[in-house]
Image 1 (spheres, rainbow, N blue to C red):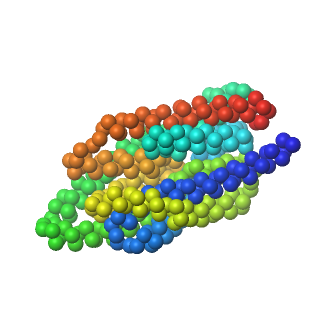
Image 2: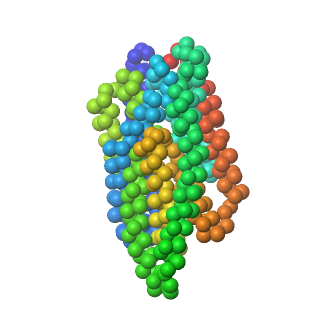
Image 3: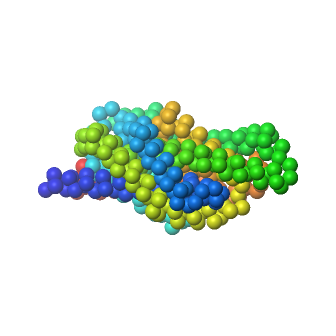
Length: 343
């Protein structure tokens, strides 16, 4: 009976991971500035964005997936299927709470926080492991630190990039005709920036692939099966953006019709650089939405526009609370599983 339940949970975890991959594409707003620019038809925008996400997922995601699915754990600890189940339940609940609160929370922060809570409960009540050695604290620390540094660097890179482009290019354009021609060039440059950004969004998205890698690491699936589901997740991310993401992109694009392509280019290029750096050099999962928010702030500061610090403060409080509250919720859920003999 227990074996049958375990098998059902594994199937459920794989199915949910694939569903999460679909939602990554469905909720991705990266291509919105390109749609707003009107350079390409919306269908082509969706195909380009989806293909780029799929490429990053298939070819560049293993570092982040292995970090989440194995490397942040201490020596000798492996995820059990019920640990992963508790992680997913907690992550989903916290994100739903954030949605009703109108706050764009990070699914990555929620996932890592849930992992933390589950592993601590496992160490204290079942695994016989010293909590001090339950994690690879260097790896976990680098992940958490990256959450604070990546938005900050997003702000700084955007600010610096705008100042450079403004000084050596934008300020030299005089008259409406020259400015219009310049912005048309940026609209095509934005295509490249969006492709670059979408590739690293796919590579850095830890939610689905981290769960799959954990199942591979604990022996539930083999390496060939893992890569098979990675490809499936890539396809679902493409379909998520193409089928459902169009509504998010169209909605945001309608609000960006007055935005200049040069602004979108600078923001997306800055965010992509941060994502690439964190993925390639440190394999840490970060929040793309958080980096984008701070990149917009950096651009507003550079252009001497007003920044709504009150709204930003509210978002920051939720960002900080995500990790501990997700950890507490996941820990309680997993403790409930342990109470019924499900390890």
